[in-house]
Amino acid sequence: MEHGPSGGSTAMRRRSGVRGGARMECLEHDILCIIFSFLDVFDLVRCTAVCKSWNAVIRKSELLQVLYFKLRRDSGESTSSGQRKSMEFGLQEVAMKYHRLCLQRGRIDIHRWKAHSVGVDQCRMKMGLLLTGVGDKVMRLWSLDSYKCEEEYYIPDTASLVDFDFDESKIVGLLGSRVGIWTRNGKRSIFPSREGTFSKGLCVRYIDPDAVIGCEDGTARVFDMYSRTCSRIIKMHAGPVTCLALSDDELILSGSSLGSVSISDLASDQRVARLRSTDSAGIRTLCFNPCSHLVFAGTTVGYTYCWDLRTMKSLWETRISSNVLYSLSYLRSDNSTLAVGGIDGVLRVLNQNTGEVLSRCLIADERPISSTRNMHAFIEKKKGIRLPEDAEVDRIPRTCRPPITCLSVGMKKVVTAHNSKYIRMWKFNISFVIWVDLPSR
Image (cartoon, rainbow, N blue to C red):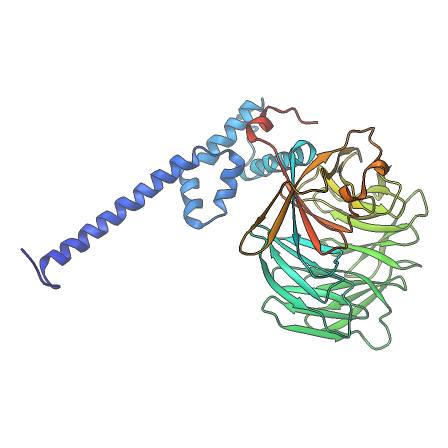
């Protein structure tokens, strides 16, 4: 028997569709639970960030809780209610431990792709995105999952890009004696400093709403990104300000070519302290870890230094190279490892708390082991190796260790720039099962 569009069978189909949809939703939930049950705790955490529905399935099924407390029991930790930490904090600890061991002992896969038509020497990584530039007339924003160039930001023909920083909404660039702002929708605004007060800028760091410029005359100039004016001029050093770091509690940390680190209060314009190194070599790179309150610096003669900002005292110093160190960085929330790169081309992983060199990494061979092309880029793949402690770096071919001019650290990965057309992503991986059984150092 046939029925027209308005017949009773239509209503029946609708009711059946509702019930069928509910059954399908339940079925999808059950299938996802089965699939998720095969994952380890680290991959399961990553799945919670994919979409709201996956997050809801994982949270409702309590798979994370079960895996997390099993992991603690397997590692010999107590799970009694009196000693039980919040799961979110505990999972962060698990992730940081996994990250540390991957950098220290994991297999190294290196992916290289052509990012620019000329050499660039700077890169910044935030929120799963990578911004590259300095040397080219364009900055490019990359997806680290697909190697797709998401956006391009062009430099005026009359200016040269010196340094840059970015957040989720804008890019701030230092253009000699001017500051440029590029919004994520592509609009660009360039404005001069207050007339006659801006000497040559050497570095910039940005924390909304202020961009801080380190200048050749030893000052730090603070620009308000909304009023587009230079709001403060702070004397930091007697010599050029070569590098900067900003803290969330409005401190400016600056390194000088004269070999000292100066700390000033952004709100009061007052210098808080000066941290001195034991040699007069210039400070070339600087970073600050707000979780541990530790300040790290690299010099032009290969020394790394660490000070505790709470006591203003030196914790350790170590010479890891005979040449200049260009860049050091760490993963946010990680209090254990520090990645360092310089002119000798060795990617070093240091212990943040002691300065011990945990690993020295190089490209295994100048020939790629494979190459692939996706719809966005041509990816050349190589293996990385770890140098033994007694290996002499100078005897290793330069093709296996191009100078690292800048690096940025993400979860189980480090991105490096080399003043060339190419950017490298170093991926560090270790089996989760093996990781659980490994004793930590």
